[in-house]
Length: 115
Image (cartoon, rainbow, N blue to C red; front, side):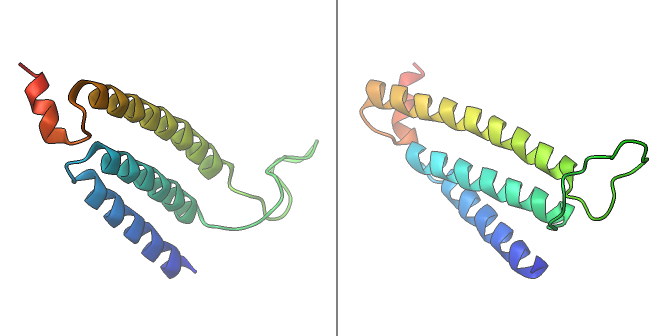
């Protein structure tokens, strides 16, 4: 299972980087989405995918009883989701504004707006 997850993470990273390096803003947005999904899956797979109860410590105990889910990985992924949503929202507005100004989504057309 770990090998399959590593392969999926690698493919997502490769496809995301390929799309980010294209000269089209729409492909850039799709690539950023793939990179964020790959990062989330990498965090989950690094923490170890296991099912368990919530990590709640019973009253009077020093540690949770039995196998529990990993709360740190879940917190990191939630944070990564919020950050990637903000980044994607910014790039979508950038794409919209660039399309209004230049009439295309090509990054080469944005070079004319610098002057």
